[in-house]
Image (cartoon, rainbow, N blue to C red):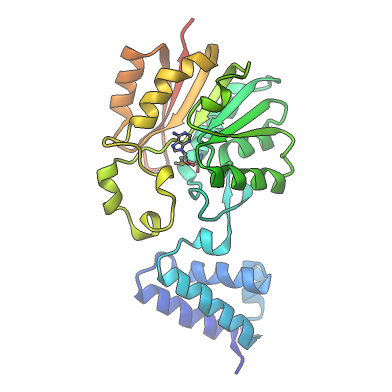
Length: 287
Ligand SMILES: C[S@@+](CC[C@H](N)C(=O)[O-])C[C@H]1O[C@@H](n2cnc3c(N)ncnc32)[C@H](O)[C@@H]1O
């Protein structure tokens, strides 16, 4: 029997709330927006409208997935990053708001330059290079990831944003895809895997069970990828080129030390995220 929209919203809001799901009403609203093809405003314009049995059953299915701790972005199959719509599924990490600082720093440093070679290393869903290319299209973008799944999602996202012809995608370990190529980069941007392996079990099930482990952990101290990137990157960078990347909440002191004392880079800037945590580091190759 069809039920009123507002009654459905209220009852599923309560179910998710009791189960401890964060922002329960927002979850229900987003699912209904998708199922009914409505905006949030439309949802509340006629709250007494009837919802068909099929639509209610579809919502129940999505709610069950959320009750199993599947992230909302995977359930909806999409997310937003730096104002851009991206497909989002278990092939890659869900882009996080902190990573937008990597993009904004990159864009600030490009200013009105054109024709730069820019690499999105460990690209996942392609969020960084796609956001960069959307704002500054006249550069040569490259993106790579060890995960073939991630690269296929990143390609689909570039197509979705009409940027497929602006970004060249590669699959492989760190810089391996560029070893035999004659490319030197002016900027490398990355949000590397940086969680300690021992911390994996402590992560929320929503992350641990659904997001790819390759995207999360990197050795015992979470630094394997970053150390290798700092060692190998100079070979692929022009003089005075930039390396900009995100780090874990407790890694900045170690990384600043490492960069200043054991690499060919100078530390240009450390950027705090929305919570005041030192989150992104901007390095520059020495002369
Ligand atoms: C934290 S995710 C970041 C993805 C995306 N840039 C973002 O911001 O959402 C890290 C990515 O590193 C990739 N990765 C892990 N080890 C790698 C390696 N050795 N070489 C290249 N990519 C790697 C993973 O597949 C994953 O997509």
